[in-house]
Length: 133
Image (cartoon, rainbow, N blue to C red):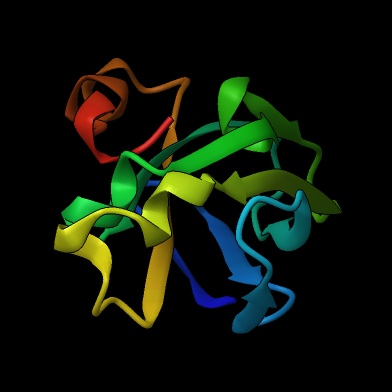
């Protein structure tokens, strides 16, 4: 088992609220897990956002696999709309065999939503393939 902690952030240019439905989850190594995040468009116009992610500590990132994720596509919310967004993931069993991860009791999955109808925000979104998939 490993504890997965969920973190949610929003770029100041995106008028959304965004939070995990659960702060932590106990996950069986190798088994698929499902977590939910909730986003709300706090503006009076439709707004499109894109989520960038990070997995910490970095050594655990290579063993954290997202099967399905809201972060794979842009999300458009109507004015005042709220949606629940799932992420399906697992921690590869090799996580427990790696000496560099043997003392890691917790993995953090962190998302930041950026406004995608503003080209300057999308360019600023982190792209870090080394920190997870």
